[in-house]
Length: 464
RNA sequence: UCCAGCGUAGCUCAGUGGUAGAGCGGUCGGCUGUUAACCGAUUGGUCGUAGGUUCGAAUCCUACCGCUGGAGCCA
Image (tube, rainbow, N blue to C red; front, side, top):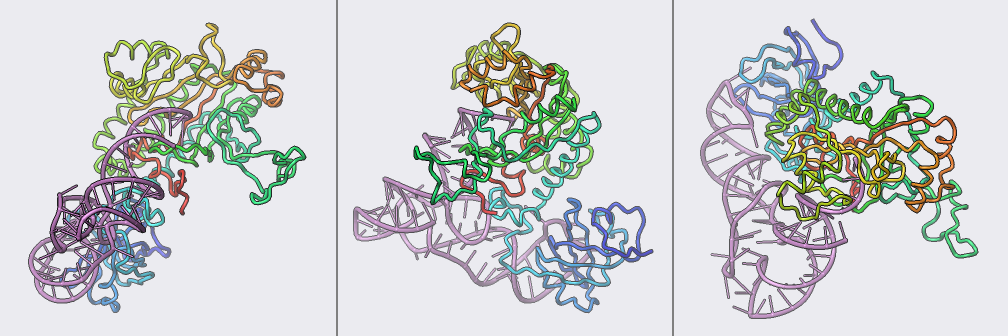
């Protein structure tokens, strides 16, 4: 039996029967000489596993094969047979090896392990490493699962704009989008920059959230979600922040805070379960080399219900904890990272959802509760990462929303279209944002957000 | 942006005022159905950059750059 076109190594390794002739292509991970032949470990990225190639010295180009070093690309045809050695089921006995591309001793990747920090400096080559090829296979798989989760539940995928004219969504600094000549800005008679002359005839920015637009679509299509790039110009230098990241934002009409929390928790569990089931090799690698407790923690997350507490209860727990905190804890103050950590890592030791925050510390669009003091905000906190989901029931009452805006020093006339949603057929609705990269960090155990993004953008860094 | 730590060979690191080191990698040779193979030899440096102190600086001081951890902001 022959197979005419090249076979992914993943497919070759999954075969249940030998095959006389097969072609595989990939990059040499390592090569070892034996007496009359050479072992080549070949990887094509389709799977974490390598295919062992047996290159006999009877090959016409055996001298060239013996010069193959880590990183070279080759195309191999031969017979897939049960391996004589331990450690792998199949191996490929080559009858032809075409050297496609060679490397020299300046190739930075070695057989031995490298630190993520070093690999980050060679972001164009790091997908050839086990760790990063695994991260990005999982990233692909989970992106697919995001769509499946929502599509299975009747959500409509909405492409909200990446360029936005809204500069006050209450989420960090924005990147300006302009075609004006920075060396020679047009000025009004008052000396201010004349944005009427800019491409969109107004100031525009890269989006920090698709929420407001998603709300408009939820109030027409009932259940929608966005999944796309998001930009923050915040000068944040941490392992959890990037300037460009992907965010998932479901928005549901006729849905209150409880339904919102239910969905967020179900979603987190769904993605964790997906990775555990569909990316077994990769998850095993993360559990071995990134975080020894990862798999136990993830299984716990899937099995157990998440804890839910109000902000007020969280504050009481923290005050009674007896733990020493650097920052004060009191009703009305923001929960600091150390407080969130204590709740999710020390006290509950599982993901928790904190809800009903004081309205003073939350954005204008969140629905004010009947107590008049709190809003229907919810933050889903996970061990090791902190906030992974932030959401709320939205304020659907026109007069209350306008009042919230004024309290936040916003001019309601700037948000006419958003207020129209409350003016015409308003309904209670809810949604949340989930940072895709933070989810990936949680699921892979990789502690730095720069290492779950193919080419990360962070302050002072956009090299690739 | 703030606080702390770290920048020495391709990689991971030792060297704390007196001749620049190790392991791994690479190269060469040997052995071998091997598994991050093994054995031997060998290669490899503007000690982040620029100033300063000193008879003498990888080592002490200053500034800058970069990286890491933490904080703030948030997803």
